[in-house]
Length: 64
Image (spheres, rainbow, N blue to C red):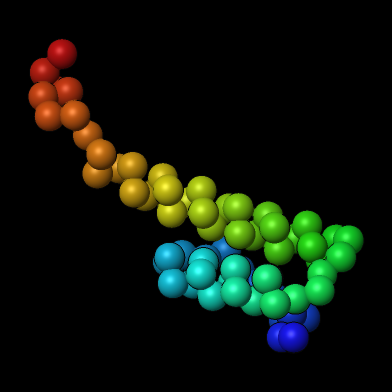
């Protein structure tokens, strides 16, 4: 099991998010620590999905 006592920040890249998820799955968290890690993973995933959507534009959308 990995040592999850170090502070974790919101991941900025997909690679960072995957690493945090691996650590999370290998852990035995409970209570507030479990919720804290869940929030970090959720926030990172939402931030990354928003970045992916920025390039998903309908051609000609600005002409309407």
